[in-house]
Structure formats: C-alpha cells, structure tokens
Image: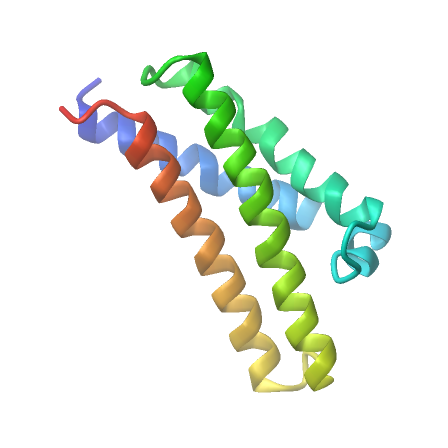
Length: 128
C-alpha cells in the first residue's frame, strides 16, 4: 500500500471509529456527565475513544510503542477537554438543538476531533 493510501485508510478508520464512539456507544450517563469536570461519564467516553484508536497503531506501521502511548494519552486529554469545553459553552448559553449556535458548537467540536486524528497520523505515519 502506498503511503498516501495508508494515510487515507488510517483516517477513514479513525473517522468511522469516531462516529461509533461518539454516537453509537454514547450512553445517557456519558451525555449528561461530559460537562461535569472529572465525572465518570466523560472520562469513560475519552477512554472508549483511545481504546478504539489503539488498533490504528497496529494496522498502520509508524512509530514505536512509546510514541503510540504518548499519542493515545494526548488523544485522551484533548478529546476529554474538547467535549468538556463544548458542554460548558452550550450549557452556559442555554443552547439547544433548536438554536443555530448549538449546531455551530457541535460542528466545531467534531472538527477539532477530526483535526486531532490528522495530527495523530501526521506524527505516527512515516513521512514517505
């Protein structure tokens, strides 16, 4: 597989993983607790994400185990705080799905997660 095709396959994996973890596996507890700093639901949600990200490091050759651990730790911290920040803003402003700014916040949240995956692969995958 060419490096370009490997990168496309890897980002596809991560985007599908993200949809599963953020929507299919999200429970009511996770949804309710993501805005409460340190609550189990938000932590569990970030853990689900890194558990589902981990196979990308086995499927697509790149750095070693130490780098994979650092990238997973970074994803955990970033994912948790992206979600928490979005929830803080949405709750403070009282936005609901009826408000356009709710959708802006959700869209920016999802964009930041996607850019996190781009950064992970940029660091992980070989340059050429």
